[in-house]
Length: 120
Length: 136
Image: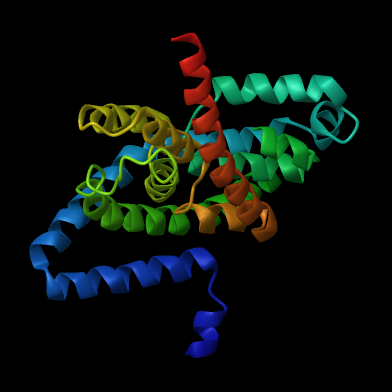
């Protein structure tokens, strides 16, 4: 059992931990539990379109953009042009971190330089 | 096509549980935190930016929400330097999002970035107010 829990990903562990915490809160203070459960549900429904868009962008990066293009424009030797692309991109793509991190991860996998992560 | 779909599915599997878990943390912490926003500031020019940055670091939302919260804090009489620090920290330091950032961008990167942004949010808040005083 403990081995199985150890092998779970960080996300699943966090999710299980939060369910346990919510259940404990439910036992201690039921009205607060209902309040935070409803607001969690509403927030989750609210972010579904944003998440769908994020995964669509991730798919587009994986399917259409070749690593050579990313390496050329956002790689180690892209210079000032890379800075400009990332600065413009970060100005126009303004969203919560959970939309940015998955996209940055895919761009990293395609050869994006670490300095552009920070800039973004 | 299959490779792109597989990679996207892997990304979805990593993201969804963390995002749901983090949303649950935020909805648990924010209602407790919001009622103390106006009470925890001291009026000190040295301590308030630090408190503003800590509160901003623990809060979460798109930057637009921080402007509304910041406006309310100003109405309550909280100093502009604390509110500036709060807004800067809100939009650059994602303490509650740390598990997500670590899983995507690595522990060292995530921790260092958040620490540096936390310190600079205080410094930039002080510099912003000093600059404003030069022109007003």
